[in-house]
Length: 77
Image (cartoon, rainbow, N blue to C red):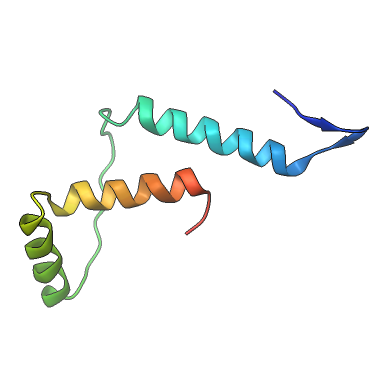
């Protein structure tokens, strides 16, 4: 789907379409967990984040996935 503004190609609309496709793919494949992310963080940071997640009936993995999905939806950090 390409949007035209007058006779010029509208780059912003193309970016919106691409972002929408990315969001759709993420949502459709959110249960197809086929990759792992490993990274190091400070022990205190992890412990505190984990504690806060538990207080809110969540977990570290879920919250990081939600954060990543929101970044993809918005198209920026």
